[in-house]
Length: 182
Image (cartoon, rainbow, N blue to C red):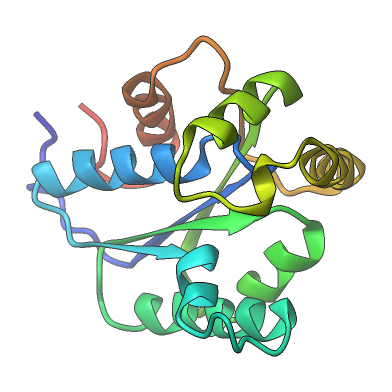
């Protein structure tokens, strides 16, 4: 059990970055579940959900990225304990979010890596996915992520293959500043 006696003085941001179909959403949902079970207030922000709000009339993905970044910043200004953000896959996307983070917020950058073939299998098994099921599109997305990976801020890098979401989430919790681990 997590000792909540110590006050959470300021919000925490967990940024989960990675290539398409690496398991960002799965990890984020498990992390949120674990934190809420321990009584923490948590907001989950997701780039795809922001984009879906305007589909099919979304002018460009740049709009979705900008709104997503503003949403992360807005949640961090509410007094919530933790914001778990997932969806960034380039250094520019990460920076756009960081530009909206208020001063004094502890940020934990979690970067996921994944095997292309396993990512393709995950994408194809997900009925809610569209173009990410296309191997050519997914390969290009993974290659773009690989180009950004060396410059990607990373406090914790996790290779997802062979690990359960709960184990990945526990690894994140052990690195999260504050009274979040057993």
